[in-house]
Length: 115
Image (cartoon, rainbow, N blue to C red; front, side):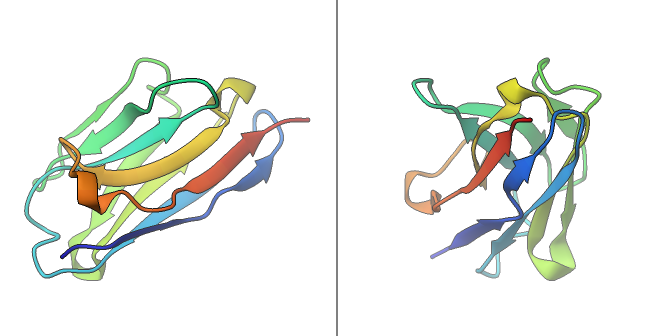
């Protein structure tokens, strides 16, 4: 069973940066695509960034050029570097497989962008 634990969220001013981390347990972490998802109040959860086991990345148009996803298979960790943050980036951020596995959803980490 894989457990995913997100961290690194917080309150940041518009234009600021945050780096999220997702630590995974389980020996098969390096196999398969991973993604960062977010859910804003009153909205559906959406995939914002994905990375394959080989390191290829893909981004939602809303974050392209501002967010960078990366992974360290040796540390069983996925990262999301978020720059030039906007108020509309405010959400709870989660990591999971792509496509997501229901039982893998963690608690997420809150990101609030506000002045």
